[in-house]
Length: 192
Image 1 (tube, rainbow, N blue to C red):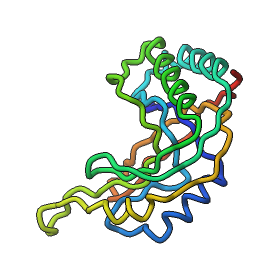
Image 2: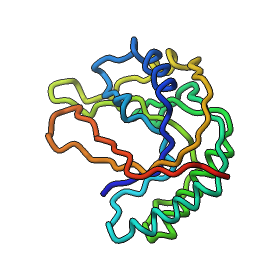
Image 3: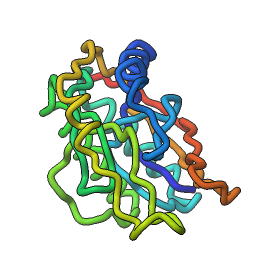
Image 4: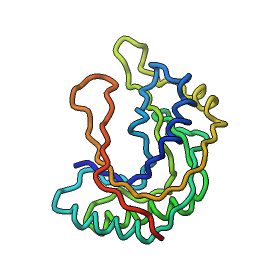
């Protein structure tokens, strides 16, 4: 199964962000569903069933060693011309530490993780659509108006107290714009 470790924002944070992007949602971008919003800590990709007990034990240990911390959704950014996201503010050292621990837990459980890059906590809001037939040369949608509209977004701080392991099921219908489905398979309290 395709898995990643994540921080899931509480309902109040989701509601604030939903209100902020409500007027921006149009069909030029493929918008992510609020029900699936998350801040990825470590993306693991396909994980074999026989690795799961070890992975669960190591993630539990990582959560147990990490104290709860404050986070809020804040501002926005983009990855090239492909994705629009809102960032995070607050105790960023703590969220980076938890991301490092989740990554290390996966590696020690035998999951081949991608090369470590500087971790940028973010929540993906939308992706640009690929080239469409009959629409010019498939030039990407300019992200600037969305970035300007969300530049001043400030969410309310919340206490992150859980490390979640989330399963991602990719769309199978072939319907354009269909979203992956996310399901929390395990969660551990942060103890510290």
